[in-house]
Image (cartoon, rainbow, N blue to C red; front, side, top):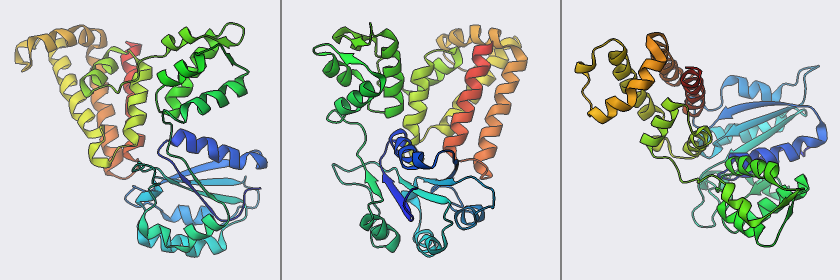
Length: 323
């Protein structure tokens, strides 16, 4: 069983945190995960405290996972310190500090470092921290994957692959899965590194263009997951809503034969015309519904901006590709 107390996982890469949570919980077999967000308007709602302190008679063991916990306020940490004394034995609490590291310093808020809940976690070895994937740690990451998958490397292959992979665990694993299919009898050669897709982050125009064409889905999702780690003011959800709305209005004018009313460069109109005709009026109208759902979900507090972005991109990609 996991030790009692709160676990602190300090890493900017949520995929690496997810892996650590699975390792911690694997000894208990089947369990239920429930997520909360430190940057929600009400970060720790009433249901969180009920889940933390009340165990159902026949319920499964639970992992309560607080994402972006570095954004919790003093009152949250004070309440958590008190609540841990009555934590249900079947509940394991994971507090994920996902801020970017400055050099090699873990981003632990000063107000948290002084709290009993964090000091007790340090004392009992419940703090795990990693800077994320870097050029220095990537080789070990790839080697661990190869050991699990029984993959071998020819001379120079490990270094070439590690250098070509994106520094994002989720995206890197997708590329490694692709390489495992390409390996000849479980052996990877140096030239296999060329199969790894370029991973420079898409700019905003590339993102919206690829999404509307139903292309480069792996790069689109890499951009989405990278966006989750950015500060709120730099995230792309609301700029994306505005951009897609402009494109949808343009496409509706095209299918309605009102091209003369479009105030855009002729080249942009030319790019959007085949997409508009492929979608048709019904699917373009559906785009406006999806945009409204995403904005409404965030502004009413029903969804975090990250959740809304993932749902919007998923639904838009299915809409565009189905056409």
